[in-house]
Length: 181
Image 1 (spheres, helix red, strand yellow):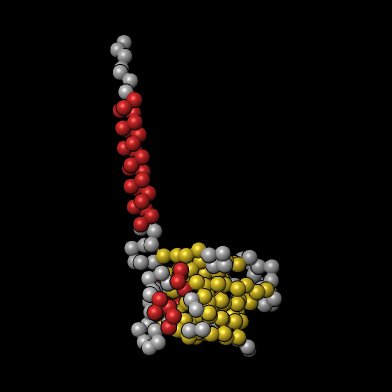
Image 2: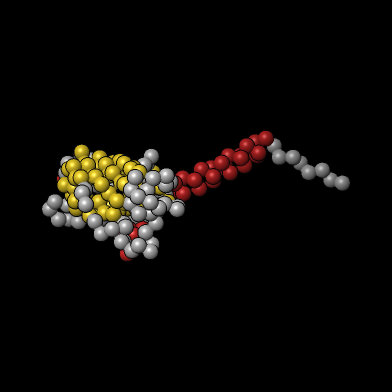
């Protein structure tokens, strides 16, 4: 019976270093592709998840105001903008666990003033009843519209769109819109 020579500590450390380097390169490459090949990305906040995603935007746009695919019936009751912060007050059924998505197609209409459109979509289960609950979504445009310079952010007209109804709320610069039926 022949004994094999055990690897020297130097060989073991070299192999361990090589494996570590490969793992680091793999993780770094995954992180850089997190934005997606089409430039899409998401920003998770305490009140919602913001998506810059043209495919997701198109899917929402195509099903807009169709009661058969509207997950949770909500209603925007107020839109306020101060600087780069937009607060959207959403009325919803009480005792309903809702997650909100704010979806942008990644485009800015090069008009004067420039324009961008955001959908507010509510996702929940077994949410029925009257609008007796309220949530406030705080959208930070500087964090959400990552590749838009400060001049555009300051001057852009933001259109906030409901997904369950055909209502749009245009918000130029600073605004305070209260919706009444």
